[in-house]
Image (cartoon, rainbow, N blue to C red; front, side, top):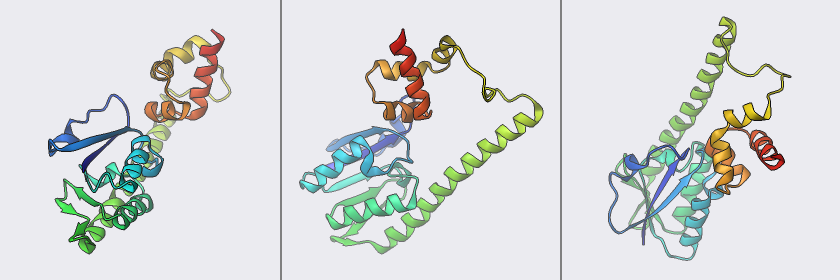
Length: 198
């Protein structure tokens, strides 16, 4: 059976770009989760790996390699599992497959290693730019972050984290909510305790 794996980081992102090369006989597996979470720990990633172990999937398509992860080790570990189970991984934007006549495609592994390294570097670069931006804003006195040690009212917290409130009301787990809303687990726990006390 053919499968298409799609990953978006937040629920307000679109999946259309990852569906451009979709075929009618593909079953969709869609995770809404950070790329930093290992493939085997994602809800749909786990489900897909179970499908593979039960021999119910033998061909997986992804739009680009960073859909599997943003960490080289995680991507190569996932690829190793797929190779062992003789499952073909097709990366659309590169136009290559992981197996050729049931044997590992060495050119694929080399290209994927390079692409995974680039994805990892982009992530590090993004976080570095974010830190630099915050430092510049602080130096200019325009940083909008909360002053350390200050206390926000419950109303302000709920107003600021509307998306967290929404996900918790949808019965999302604390960890999933943190990932979907790109906030810390502590923030989600804080919002949850405020909601409970109301």
